[in-house]
Amino acid sequence: MSEPELPLEPGRAEGSAGPLFWVSAAVGWAVILGVGLRGIFAHRIDTRPANLARFVVAGALLHDLLVAPVVIVLGVLVVRAVPRRPRAAVQAALAVSAIVALFAYPLVRAYGLSTHNPTSEPHNYARNLLIVLAFVWLVALAATVLRRRPRPVT
Amino acid sequence: MSVVLPERIRRFTTDPDEPLHQRAYASSLRDERLAAILGSSLGILFSICFLTGLYSHIQQNPVSWLPIQPRPAGLYRFTQGLHVASGIASIPVLIAKLWLVWPRFVAFPVAKRLSHVVERIGLFPLVAGGIFMTFSGVANIAQWYPWKFSFRASHFWMAWVTMGAIVAHVGAKWAIARRSLRRPSRRPALAAADPVLGTVAEAATVPGGGLSRRGLLLTVAGASGLLTLTTVGETFHPLRRLSLLAPRDPDIGPQGRPVNRGAANAGVVDLARSPAYRLEVTGRVARPVSLTLDQLTALPVHAAELPIACVEGWSYSAHWSGVRVRDLLAMAGAEGGRTVVVESLEPNGAYRTSTLNADQADDHDTMLATHLDGQPLAIDHGFPCRLIAPNRPGVLQTKWVTKVTVL
Image (cartoon, rainbow over the protein chains, first blue to last red):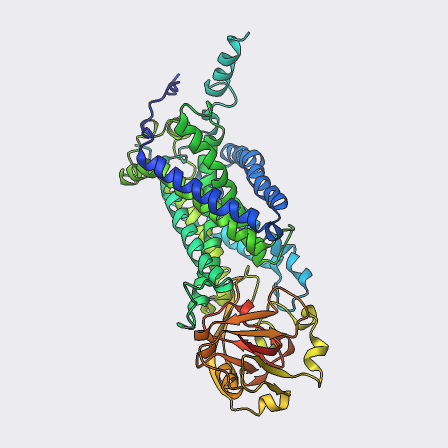
């Protein structure tokens, strides 16, 4: 086995919790509970706590239990499938493409047009997204072609 | 069995050959120094969002101890443009940071001492808050409302939850972040510094070939830069032509200017065009005034170049002309130093009235504009007249104004 043994009880150089930890935890939780959650419940006509909680919890669970594992599996597949030379550029381009597409999603779906605002979302966002993605992959291609030979790992 | 089960769980979560073992997520990119760089960048971007958001909040919910000043005229345009741009730029940083530390979320054992319990509980408002703030912000600028709550109230109060979690997290990570940021980047002492991320990073079996740590940082910076370049032109006009993904174009709309709410949507088309339209100045005045449109446009004209800055992050500056509010108040014989409420023809809506504090009402550029860029206001811009005042969110620049009440 060339891989290092995993220590079962790794030493905690993270530092035992000092005064800074406890003071900021106290201040942080005072703000979370005393301002944030109190505000949410004090203004529940506007914040609709049950509906809000659904979105807040769903967002975190969706990320932690679905998006992150899927991305990690995809990452493994990319490492296996893509040859070494373009690999870094492909990884970068995939990441940027996914993020840009995520951001553009509500625009491409034109959700905003339902407000009948004559000036809202005036562009063809599907086309524009493709232009941006084409740019990203052109940059990735250029980076791969122009890249010097990787130096041996020292 | 009762002895075997804990042992089974321990093996399942720590043994290299079991699925939950951290080595499964091995990557030399899961580096605590990288986590510290991304984390501090995110902390800065979120703090900018928080402070500019607070400013936007007290613009819309004034507090007596900090009255909003009308100058500098372009301040709100700057702070709100910065708010939206920082929020957009933080998306790739947040995603990268979450990817980097995700193995920690599933690390076992969950906690070994009280401080771990406190820290891990605090991760929930941190992660959930960060995701919610960016998601709800992006959805709002795209005018996508898949929820039932009020965006403004929920985004505001959740910002406090998120900031509280950030304060706690910064305190928990201060020492490790400072140490790893000081450490030269080519000497990762990972396992010693952070047991989970460290062993994960050192277990990386693919040396070279993929993204380097620097490459990941460049990728994140590139994604933030790309999102910024393709959106910021809606407020920073020199980049207008690059704004492929901006929800607004500062040159598209009636009279070549965008609006946030059209007249048809506000239900004011007939009221605004009716010959029965009057502009009234009432309240604590010596001589209540009621003006027809012709009388209004016959008054002395004031003109100024002032910005319209939407809370959603788009803005433009234009040449407005109309009647000064302070001239109208003087005409009605109102005392100086009064708060003034401006009321729209809109039958309902959260923004059918807006309040000018004494300084704002008295500013020499605060006016009821009847003309935009030399042309009579289009109905979507607020015909017959709209409020235009310096340093003010667009939603408070009330359109289709029919009444000015002195309090």
